Length: 110
Length: 119
Image: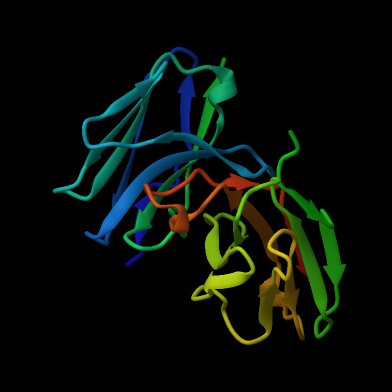
């Protein structure tokens, strides 16, 4: 079983749609949680950190459920520029290495 | 300011050859990481430096892979006797303090990567 699992997609949605991505992680000792965004043939970039209390950044909302070992990302009012791969990332206690899921590909069409 | 830079951007080599990939982190960042990303996969951790020392090399796949950071800044990832399965994008990232700085995980900033193709 992979340490971080995501549905690879692709998710094809029209502009203005709301789309949600989910991710599960296997290590209950996971400490920090993030969503990274990766454009085609580019490097990953931090989109947002994820907290148990939930956090919002504009059209993006992230949520962590430690009991279920589940992380989500909600994108409202999708834009064409949101088309990218969204990577779910965790770290373990006492280590800084990022553990990535395979990524979920989003394609927003006009 | 300048971000993380990596050279070369592309490297094509033949099976069995030796390659070196270079990473220049953001100035002042003490922590440096190497990851490898195969097609359709997320990046996989290889090695992490805190200063000059390798704090965690648990991700290096075998002894053909080696990395150094002699002066605590630039790092070189070295691959001996390359195999076709080594073909991937090699990503470098740096962060301000890393775990040694306490207070949780710093943001890691990634370079554009080196695309390695082994023929």
